[in-house]
Length: 204
Image 1: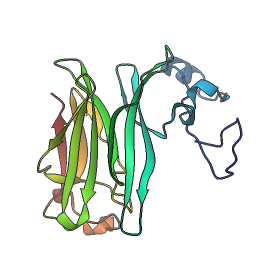
Image 2: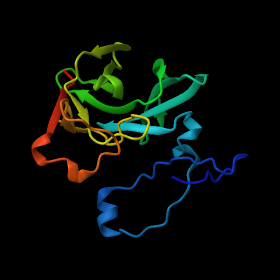
Image 3: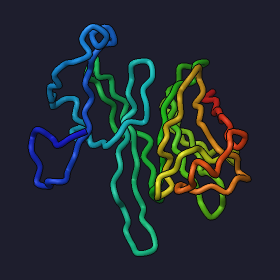
Image 4: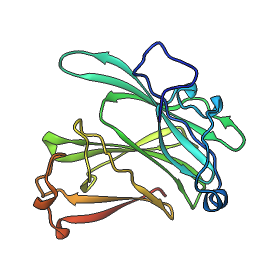
């Protein structure tokens, strides 16, 4: 994260960049000089963040404000699949418009090889989560009803700050149970180990 080396009219504007570096090189040379490469800047791809990576592909996230009023904000979201090794990148896909506050994760259905993205947000007044899964092969969103728990931790506006861990075809969250009163500013000393669970979402 840092200021774009190509300049900006907005002094506060920042951009994220990918720095390709092999594990072998990192082990043998942990101290190295970073070089800015125009190709690896996310803003150049009309995206702001990363949902995850799997099988050599990185799932980028894009967002723009669509509607703004005193009562609510609507944002448009989209994905782009990117292969940094070949520099190939997809068109925008999975576009949807909804309220702000979504967190995103990325993985693969091992049984079919289908890449999938998960959009999720916590609805405070209902003590539940809005979770939907996008299939890149079918270009279709599917809602998951009654997601059982609240992933931990939440930001001030309800988005999921801690990413899920993708493992063996599943996304896994550290979470607190639904019946535990929980907010993003909850102090750790008010929670016990017994109140935590690990929630897995099978992408198959």
